[in-house]
Image (cartoon, rainbow, N blue to C red; front, side, top):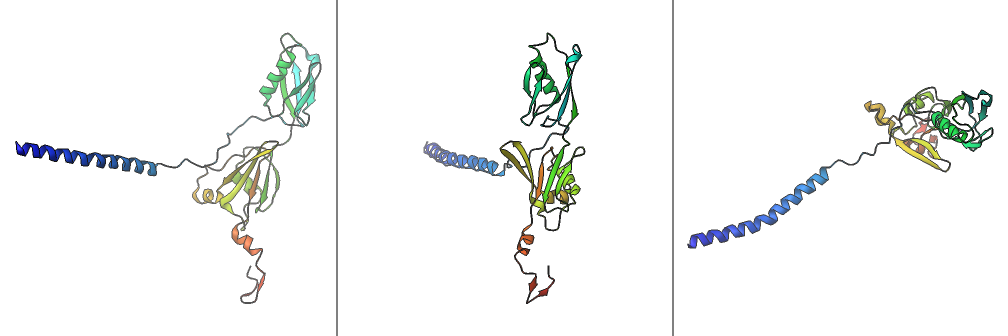
Length: 234
């Protein structure tokens, strides 16, 4: 009887000791899982390819009516993004695709025509372009001839100079009249590894800026002639 009671007391003490130990082990495992969880990716967002053209000021639109051809006309997109239509007033089309413009104009003419059948075509438009500045061979504004990525844009502008900071190339994209989105691209890693997942596709109006590396910045402050080492070091 005494042995049974002693065994029971020992078992009780052992369980009391194991409960906090088990709790500690569980917390340790949970902490380990938390530590090993991968961080959220900070890679830039990608630009969808083959985007539809967005109407901008200066574009010329041809509007044709299947049932009332006498109403056909050509209109220019004004600087504020509006076009003026005969008999219906102004319609805002800036920033819209052609299908969206067709819908907007059809809706506008629905109060004038019973069943308007309207077609919209783009007669003249601003050529898509991108700008490259900073430490490249030929900074400037370039016409975008087809699908173009950041690396392709840099090569079009003469490639990186020796003074370029490849790891911090900036892509600047205007998102509205008063805001600009900036993405930092590690072109040095892309070119060294062949991993082109960050090689974003450009949109018209984008600017690529290549900053100067630290060594080149320091050279601007170092005299070209050094009494100890002699001229022509740089």
